[in-house]
Amino acid sequence: MPGFDLDRRRAMQALGAAAATALVGGTARAQAPVQMISHRFPALEFYAEKMRGAVEGVEVNTQLMPFDKANELATIGLSSKADTLDIVYANDTTVHKYAKNGWLMPLDDLWAKFSDEFDLADFPERVLAPYRYEGKLYCVPHNVNVMLFFYRRDLFEEAGRQPPATMAEYVELAKEFNTPMRAGTIKCLKPIDATMNEAHWYFNTIGDGWFDQDWRPVFNSENGVKAIEALKEVTAYAQRGYATAANDECTLALQQDLAAMGLQWASRTAAMDDPTKSRVVDLIDWAAAPGGHTRTATDGYAISAFTKQDPELLFQILATSSSAANMREGAAMLVPPRDSVLRDPELAKQFRQYPGILAALETAVPTPPLPEFYEAGEFITRRILQAVAGEMEVKAALDAAATETEQLLESRGYYR
Image 1 (cartoon, rainbow, N blue to C red):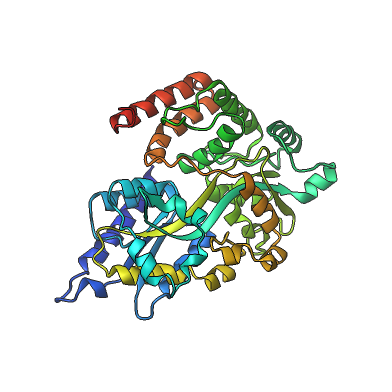
Image 2: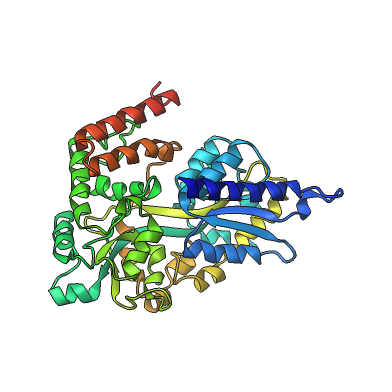
């Protein structure tokens, strides 16, 4: 993909340039700008701004991009042990890969040292747990995200319909609402992350999940096949270009009245009511997805194990940007991981998406805590898309993905 390669070269050149200026005329590296790389969506753009002003006199160079690009660039930089990255975005899945490879700095000592100053006890263990690897903490949480069901309240009311409670009802409504001008539903199937998000919902609602307790794939079970067959069926009512659509494209489809409903992250709810971008202001409502069991994720930031910056300075940037005050300020576009903010009844009154978010959180499940999850996702998403496109039978496609996944995990010592 030429555009992807160009973006990657530009980002790596920027990181290289920052490294090149780390020592100029004997100036210490600590005086160079802090380099941060991150996934991009409204909540993370908000936090990037807060990082830039977190510590007076410290410049933070924030580079934000779609998830797959950020993950690849972080992997390139960290695997080479370069000091061109200081702060790295990580979610509950990528943190295990980064930590397993020794690319991140454990934060336990810093967490204990600054706990009182930044009220870090306000982060409950259920939020911290996904960021632990082999008992050590590696990230400062900034956002708890969950996928919930977006739907056009006005269209449902006109049709005398309620939000679907089951997958079967969802497929029926997607067909009913589908027109040449407006898709019945959004579908986000761009590899890797977007496809994994959709598949996660289907595998956990219709199928048997991803893996058994020994990390053997179960996504190709009889129920797993039914799950992807259901996904394939509903794509007939999806927006154009769904196979290359990720969160940005699906958000735009909903905003521009190009789709009636679908699965999307809670962090995109505020965008529906942005009058400068949305044609459906106050027309979208939210609920737990049919069948529940959508993906929940945590977004946070880690410190590179190879940074030449002062770790205490970097931790202060992260702890300051994730303050309760900042979370309250950005509550319209994020799900606060601090208990004092998330459970504030005033926020539920102020932001109409909160009831739907809390309902979705009751049944949502994270992706498997497998460091190689996204690596295996390269095989899995390719096969799922081949099945959806009719290039392979669903069973054959999932069996092939399971075999490729087992080969990868066996090479990493999982089955010894």
